[in-house]
Image (cartoon, rainbow, N blue to C red; front, side, top):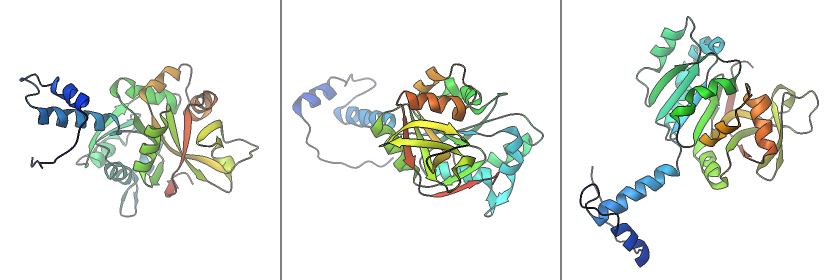
Length: 250
């Protein structure tokens, strides 16, 4: 890989700390030490893993062509275009499984299908609990989002909360989960309420820290149980996606 020579100014105490990491074996020079810790720091401040929660009953829709390609390929391309290099598809075994495997083969990113029988999407999400070490994205398998995901990732990192939820506005919010905001914080969340006081709704895409799994006890549904719990704890941030959104059930 080609490398560029640059000149930078570094605080003396920081430079001494960098030099102390040069062991002559694994890290053999000051330049290598700086490069190593820059990479390490940038990786910790980025999100490279995504999870698609695809119900078995929605697999057929995910495989249908739209805009010249299938929904599942559009979702994969969306993630790939925003720096995601690992995608877990959590689903159930159906007669469409072979077609699903064929559809994801040859993807731009590493795609792994994880089968998990679950009562709800929160329970399904626990299938990847031991596979994620840093913040990760979750998207509903029956939706297509196209917006600047990198801005959402930046907000998640900057606010340092357990979860960030993609938001949009709708004239008929009763068909969606609704969010009440206090600044950036979602302080109340209700799934498909009969009576509503806001037109701000869930866009079906989220970013979580792995520590969020500590709050999963007794939760089968993200929308009905986990998000209200996170809102009460002031650990749920909202981000307006301002982009294309399609729900295959609409």
